[in-house]
Length: 551
Figure 1 (cartoon, rainbow, N blue to C red):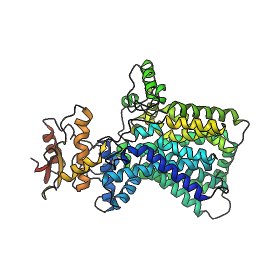
Figure 2 (figure 1 turned 135 degrees about the horizontal axis):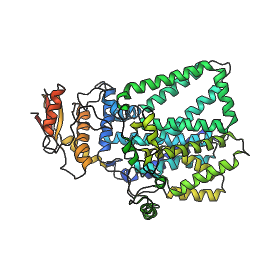
Figure 3 (figure 1 turned 180 degrees about the horizontal axis):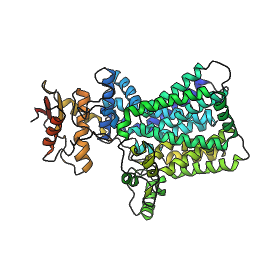
Figure 4 (figure 1 turned 180 degrees about the vertical axis):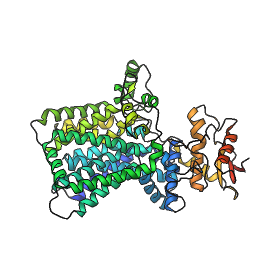
């Protein structure tokens, strides 16, 4: 399945890949590069929370915290499981912090690294597996870096782990092919490979559970499709099952161990989940497959005039704004039609694989939608373990981005070179946005953190008594995010536990939201007494930047 690059020097391949990554990163992040990183990619609150979670891992590697017990939601044990655990991104973040970067710059560099992994994996998938020409493979990686839906949603950095989709396909395909061609040689290399794949799955789940969960659906759909389409895949599958039952058993055991490890950490959180009603509100209608929000320079004006007529609501930039641009979508569809039309006359395995990838994309895209008032995903949320932990079905489209791009580029490769180049240019232009979310002010936040005096020696834990900013009128900020995000980051940087916190799920009995309510301080004291942490509890006033003993 993997072709050798005998006619092209490795140096050329590496140089082109590096150039693609540098240019793509530069184009997306130029607004903050030119200001010396005065801000980073996030909204003012989600980024703070993510940085606090990453700083927890930096403290873990410094042997100052236990892995499963971040020091927010104090004294709750196992708070790591209340959100995606960021194991891999935490390791990269800690490396950048160890090199001397501040928390905000380290966070941004992790985002860059994840994006580059996705671009390189997309290039390899296109070139080595689907056998696209080098220009089309490089074009695939470039488009992945600038694709409009991921550019808009990069405010939620965990969604950038769409990057792992092509990497996961590469690893699965390599393991499958190695098993199918294994003969009498030593088996320890394949045992190591299987163990590595299982470890990768576990670490991916413990970093970005959202994307891994959807990848499992995607991979199942892909494998069933390729098995139905390709006789060689069926033959190889039969050979693996009959000739290597011990290795199959080992693979299942390794994957089972990975699942057990994930459940050991996430188990309690997965038992909660989101409401079906919430899932319905965040599933899209068919038009949302092309919902690029209000900030796409090319298509938002067009969509704004069409969208209300179809949905009855105005176009906004929201959780539903994860769709693909029209020319990219049409190119993907055209490529899929060509794959279907030529399938009977072509027995090339790359085409069968590409068609199977297209089918898997269609199936996962269907899971994003609702028909009438019922979401397709709610069927899984009701009956499939862990499915209710995924809050926004429309986000699944983001994870399909690298696959949609590769299939579209396969279609371009079948056109005359000039026509393909023009279409590629149009696809690149239609990705441009004017609302990239560089809204977390790094300069101001570092100054704010520096302005907070050290906690008095008697303070063993704290809560934010007065938020940094007055009420904004935004319910989510005033009730949940404003005080919690600051408290989490201060806790992890100053290494003093906080009773506050904000994650996907919250501990049972925790009610320290709504800091502007008159009973907030009383709720904090009750919570502290109930959990035995009232001794040494301090209140931090972020407006006056003062610490006081909690009453």
